[in-house]
Image 1 (cartoon, helix red, strand yellow):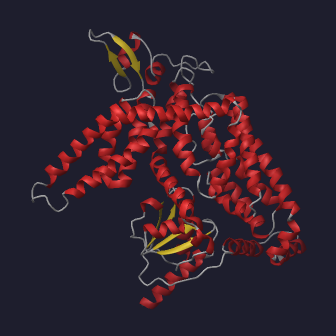
Image 2 (cartoon, one colour; image 1 turned 90 degrees about the vertical axis):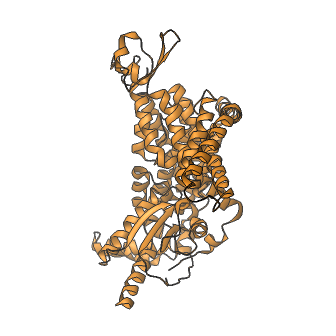
Image 3 (tube, helix red, strand yellow; image 1 turned 30 degrees about the vertical axis):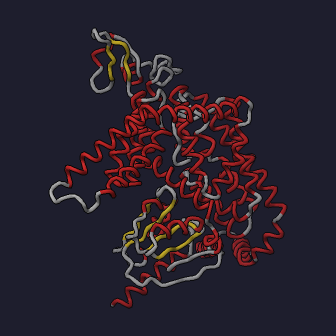
Length: 542
């Protein structure tokens, strides 16, 4: 079965290109978020101003250990060096400096993980190895964490390796394949590392300086909140990854390495605007949107799946103005009061935000919480006004008589019931599939179903879980249901399920699969159609 809405078929050109670019950037960063979190916690605990550092705001200084893990120290702690610290010595053996885990991780580990991931995306393991070699040259040729360099050099190096291999594809004499492959990769990696050291690194250093200066300029002129004018609409249109992972995350890591936190991590990840929007729909919405908004708010705020509120904004485009205002209010709060995160909050859950905000101190955590509350409040108030002003028209347009009948039945009974809840859920799922669709039947046995989204995590994982449970209830347990990034689709899936805005890209990556478009990964009647299709296939095969 394939479902294609008019909105999906019209997406193309620049928009699809930006989405694809953003997905690629996200694909480099998201698989390595665990490493960012590990580095963030080490920074939070052991740098001088960390929980156990020499300048701990709590007075919890862990003498010796904190200096070595966080960097610094003197000969009194030399015995701790081992695997936890690298020692820089002069020619006569005198210790010059101690470099703990914080510096090497942000300077070498994180950029190399990004480069390796990018290389693998372009050209598998071979691309990942060459990308890592080349990126070392960029890292050593600069004096700042080279995330932008890794995100650019990594894919370029892997692509060049791919082109070099094509030169003698099928021309190598049997028995010499390993020799040629290893030497060609090693030589190309060496050349690119040297180029990265002398040329590419300094260029990236200049680009980073320009971007950093631009951000500083926005902060100095109190203009940083205006970035929300771009970020919030971009999120709703799935265009945010190019901005977030291409600019905010690399610059934020550099700022966090220097000051222990960065406001840039909160521009896109703040869950406040989405929460405010969903709460407004909860109180002032109509029909399906009103019914499903409370559950969506819990998922968005605690689960960090921001995509779940996008359909609500798209159903009433003027509410994007409320999201912009809320986002700007949150940024303003952090800018004025000095709030920020120690590492990226991914997913953008209040739990992840809390973990990343508590490192710089309790005062910072309170500021971040305040920014979330203010962002949610501003968005809620403006969205409430918009929804109330158009409520009558919305009721007439939605034809919400069925929803009103459910409410009246419950009012007459005096309490809710499982039947009424089921009808309400049915109404919500019907609304999520309001776009016209056409249905085609799969011609091959369905054995593997893949949910695909930008990062291959979060929302697609939830959708896969929902469908997996539906199949299990239907007695179908021999079908594999997984989730992955669109960029990683390899054409082996029998059915690919995506949100409408992403279907075109998924089709390009896996043209022979049956594609299903949904508005909402959590609630869609298309899942029941997939189950019915599988059941019918099984009956025909008997």
